[in-house]
Image (cartoon, rainbow, N blue to C red; front, side, top):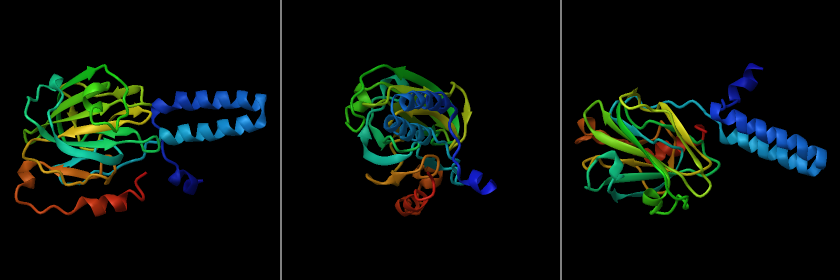
Length: 242
């Protein structure tokens, strides 16, 4: 039994009611016809898989800015942060991580520090892979100040299928890198806005592990330092992190 429990991934609390609904529908489908019931079983197992919440182990480097989401780096470009976060009109490096319906959807805080402010903005539900989704889709943005005084932001963006953004943070809250802060149902993306002098350490197409893959280093430890390439590290972790 201990061996079995050791390989089971915990379920996020938000998932239990959905799993119960899927299971109830499955019982009804079995009453209608056995083939339909087995389809319901598959969908119920997928629902449990979707809401899995594995443990993650952030790097010990206090200057590390980690990925807030599992998925693939879709875009790395300079972009103006959402105006509601009060970060000004100057473009910043933005890293967009796209989550499909098979990724872990529990989101994690990218750095250690304090939450400055949050802002929810209703919007459309365009495909999250589109560049304009960052400005037109429903979103929840968070601005934080790191222990070194840097202001960075991370934004949960709804997508074509995703219809619910959950964020459990509070203004003024003290947070640690890799700490859980919310999720998005069912598939979408999270953008991270760095400060202008912070260089991304990942590439487009690279697989991210929330709370573990290092996106960038905060300037106080990153200036002049040679960072270990994260692409190979992320590839090795991704085999066991989900």
